[in-house]
Length: 337
Image (cartoon, rainbow, N blue to C red; front, side):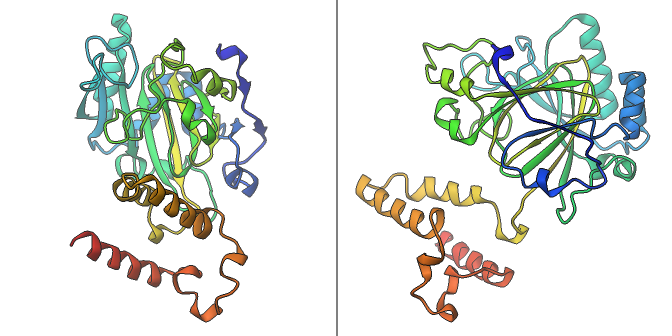
């Protein structure tokens, strides 16, 4: 099944010192082959994963990181438990060195239990690392995170920011689905999920098509890439991505950024608010609000406000930081009533 998927487009010869706008503004995923080949951590990992980890540890300041540790029945997936009453792992705080030793011991014992560090802030726990290993994203100021684990599997989910995921030790498989495949991925609960974002409830490697028949259509649109140490992948905002560690020990560094100013806030806030106060309205009222959203937001054009004097556009015009802060204050006052 995986062999039949379309491969993600590959670009080569790009320098980490100047990621081009053709990548940063792409609307489709791209594999950036060999992007990180000059990074010292990648060169160290060419000798062994231990050499790569020891290189990382010269920057480690001992800060504890968030970990996920599979339970007795876990076979690598960061997922729900069997009756969906909880998750197939436990959360803990640990040091990077302790995580590495536990991963090594699990592998030696033949265990498939997941052991995973997710989204540890690079500048916080390994300060100085980016002085030697970094991407230049131009005007964007990314959030840079470290991911470390064994052969873990995270089901398809999406992120609001754009993302460049950099494999520095080990190998990872990425299976991506376009945003339009939402209805075919059988996404689980939005506020009770194992990985932060909501995830697909379907097992990619053993899909139950009787229970999830539309998943066949999602697979028809899936794109796949297997990345080695030194490779990276650009994942556009809102693309669904299933991620697997393929080696006994894997480290990834990822860069998240958004193209809109930070003061605007996350679109997720508007979505959550709409779930709260629009979704339960009668059908005719929901349709009315859908018309308003389409007219003023999703299908907005110059014609939308052409009949209004420019100086009277108000919130229909361009929003600066002061306007956004004023609107946010008004919203907070209304929400707190």
